[in-house]
Image 1 (cartoon, rainbow, N blue to C red):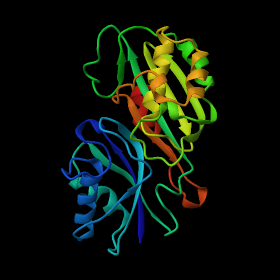
Image 2 (cartoon, rainbow, N blue to C red; image 1 turned 60 degrees about the vertical axis):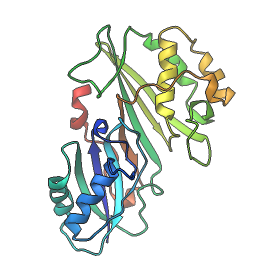
Image 3 (cartoon, rainbow, N blue to C red; image 1 turned 180 degrees about the vertical axis):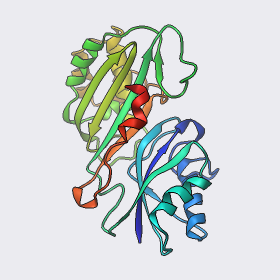
Image 4 (cartoon, rainbow, N blue to C red; image 1 turned 180 degrees about the horizontal axis):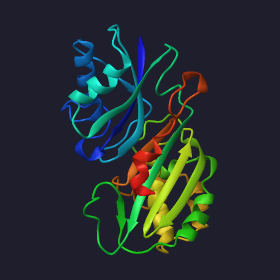
Length: 263
């Protein structure tokens, strides 16, 4: 059978999602726990997308194939009993063989949370980004509008990005602010490596006055990473949703209650 899981994790404890020889990744720990419940030596999971070290997920979706018959709650409660506290399975579904966590997905959603304050965060350190002064949110919204639609996002692409094409369809880039906490919500068909963090970094430059809102169009048109501001810190970045065709009947977004802290 093919099983799909919804996963959430605190990225601070791991060297990113994808398996590494040292074993300190979310995928490594998840594979080990699933294999124990399945009673096999090894299980390989495939995910909707990779996240870097320090990046969090409120809705990562994975799938794996297994001959062992287990009730669905075993893939949730049983696996969770074997996972470190920084990772949790939120739901499990049996899916048809045609389902693929990565290739069946038609969209991904990310949110970035940024605290603007003279004092760095302490209790929420690692859970949100930080900038030491107030930012012009209206100018950032104006700049963000230039990025909407299908574009070549090479100026916001990491040099080590392995995507076959830099063309992505950015369907949503909303910016909200309350009491010094700025939230960026992005939705696209897919994202390039570091694309969200690079976009946030450029918008922060606009917000602090180092770039004009209209400069964002120029950065996009340049198609050159060296023209854009530095990559912003990973701390406040969350994978929050993965869209799939309705036929699979899978949750597409993280439960709002799980992000209530940021409302």
